[in-house]
Image (cartoon, rainbow, N blue to C red):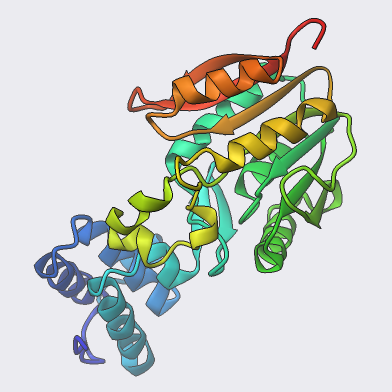
Length: 288
């Protein structure tokens, strides 16, 4: 374990942490060091800037050394601190939930673009930490949302995050297999299902493979199992003019469009900031 003397100043501890992480091959060493120092010492970025000469102290030194050892071993910062930001909002994490990714904000943006005034009823399938549902409820103050997940641990985390962000009175959480437990109609249904082919998971980065829940990653032999289930269940739940939006992998655009067409849904693609296909927006076609 990296030794941090208690008399080390906060600023010196941050510099030492950044050096140690960089030496361990962490690409975001400076950023990670700042976050871990603040978390270990229970301080803010302002505290670090204005009172950086104060010593870290025995307890802070011990926590920081532990955090640095975990990060150097490949554990993501979000897992170490047990929380992460999404859509500018704070979210607690648990072993049963994914770490919210910036790419998923494309799904939130696409939903908001379709319904600027907000829907009446919203469903989030495979809600995990609840980040998509909670983000949308903060933007749609008249909407009511239901988050579903197979994991009771994830549902507890999502419920806590709804309370943390002030939308608990407009959110319900249900254990279920995708949309099987729901009765419509819903104006908007969103999902970020597991979409990685089973054989590919072993080759993922250790930060994902070893720390994200397998249930939230494994999409079956071709990565499309969850989409097939969702597309078999959701169309009957959509209100007239309702939309289904799903996040996809970068190479799944054609497959998802074919699946949507087979279920009587039209499909449009939304790209993320890197220009990759990221979200499929589906709408019931006339007569479907």
